[in-house]
Length: 335
Image (cartoon, rainbow, N blue to C red; front, side):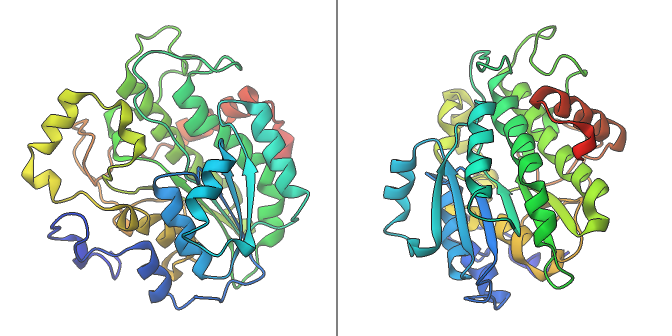
C-alpha cells in the first residue's frame, strides 16, 4: 500500500480524486530539484508520454525524448513545457538500427542517465505484421526495441547511480498481460501459433514485466533498479485498433467506466515509479494505481488491477533475457 491507495478505492471516472502526474511531483517536493540529472523517455509525441514529460519538466531534469515523428513531438510539447532542457531524438521502434542510432545520439551528448522510461507502445494490431528485422511488430515495438535501448544505455545508467539517487528504469506494461504469458521460446513471432492481436499484445506486455524483474535481479545490487506498471485505462491513440465490439462492451460497463483515467492521471503511476521516495533503492515489482499490485485470479481478464500467476517467473524471465540478447545482437558478456 502507498499514500495513494485510499484515493483509488472508489473511483468516479476521469478527473476524480485520484492523483495526477504533477501531484506526484508536488508530493515529493522535487520541483526544480533534479537539475543536473538526466531522464530518457520513449514515445513522446502523443498520449501518456506528453503528460510524463510535463511532470518531469517541473523537476528541472534534462530530458531526452524519442519519437518516430520529431516534428509532431515538438509541435505537441512546445506549448506545454519549457523546452530549454529538452532534446528530441528520432527513433523508429520497429527498426533495431534506428534504436541503435538513437542511443548513440543520446550517448554522444551525455555519459549519465538517471531515469529511463520505456513508455512507447502499440496495441492489438489486427493482422500479423513483421518488422524488417523479421520480428512480430508488437513484440518488437513494445519489448525488443526497449530491451536493446536499455542495453545500449545501461553503462550510462550505472554511471549515474549514487547512494542518494539510484538509477531507475520504468517500463510501461498493461493489465492485458493477464491474458497470457509468453509463447514458447522460439515462437515469440507466432510462426507456430495462430496469431491473435490481443494474445500478441499480452505477450509483449508480459515481456515488459519480465524485463523489469530481470533488470532488478541482475543490477539491483549495483544501484540500478527497475519496475513495470499498468497505467490504467485511458482513452488515447493507443486504442485505435480496439474493435467496435470490445469498445462498446467497455462503454456499457458502468463500473468499469468509473475506473477510466484522464491522461494526467494515467501518467501518475509512471511518475510515481520514476521519482517517488517509495521506490528509492528497490524495484522488481509490478505497479498499479501508484502502489504495488496484489495477486488476483488467473481469469484472463484484461482490465483487472491485480497480477496473476505468470506475472512473476524467474525461470522464464531469465530465458526471455537470453533470447532477447540473441535477437537484438547483444553479447551476454556486456550484461
